[in-house]
Image 1: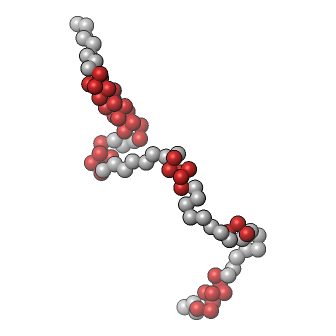
Image 2 (image 1 turned 120 degrees about the vertical axis):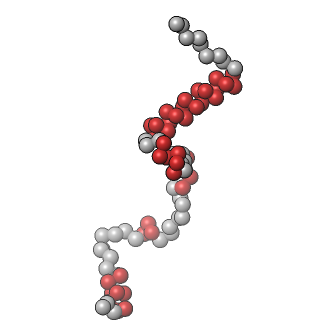
Image 3 (image 1 turned 120 degrees about the horizontal axis):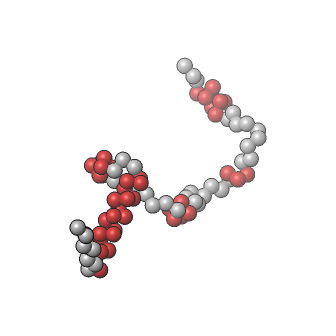
Length: 83
């Protein structure tokens, strides 16, 4: 079993090559805005995620949905199929 004294001595076992000057004033979340701006993470419910095994499958389905929605809004008619 380790004693309190042994643990405290071991906790101060920092290598001499570390520069601690940059750690004197840490800023919480200094890169948060940049990280959020560069990502768009959406969490899917389990049943939806099971239907789309990859990100490409989700994107493809959403693009198709956008195409259908835009066609519906503009009132565009589907071209007739030639027999």
